[in-house]
Image 1 (cartoon, chains in turn cyan, red):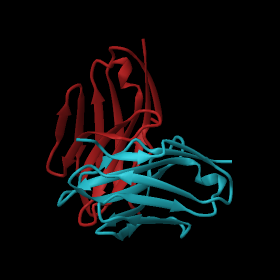
Image 2 (tube, chains in turn yellow, green):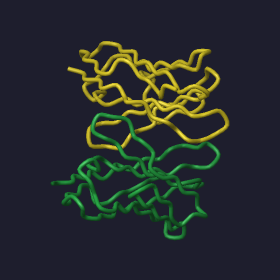
Image 3 (cartoon, chains in turn red, cyan):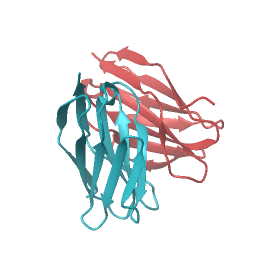
Image 4 (cartoon, chains in turn purple, red):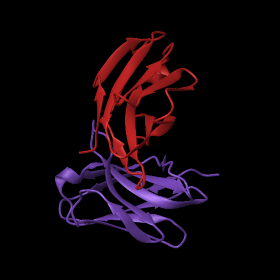
Length: 112
Length: 112
């Protein structure tokens, strides 16, 4: 059984560009959460998707948006990239009816 | 404001020695306390999970304690190994919404 997978592993973008990150949850998991982790900091909650809708949202601007597909996979989109958006972006999936989150390996985004 | 604080920020120990990491949390309503291990550039991996009624939980050489009255937790690592070098993150979860509140982590370096 594959764990949570994320793509791409690394990404370099220029200020002002847009980026899409992808996440595939573990089998049997229906909830996906996204986190931003700056270097040397703990993860910061961006938002959570359940049944293809955004269920919770952290303190992030509207430039950050997402989507969940019928197969429970998810995308994180960031528009008008800023240098401060450089971080490790983590996806976590949660089993149906439970609260435990399982994290993927992350996508390292560098904005130049 | 929901908050998790960890100390020390970083720690260097010799292989074979023991160490204890600290976590203080202010989270309401509180559900459970988790410790994660995160290797550099990778996603966090769960070590222990404790509800408010549990005082201690072990996972191999890792032992976590929880004092729900003082809202403090500790992670004790016994007979450290080089592979223990990582960041250790304390996470408090809220009940109901199951929001994860992350600490900034303790960076542990084990030297040969």
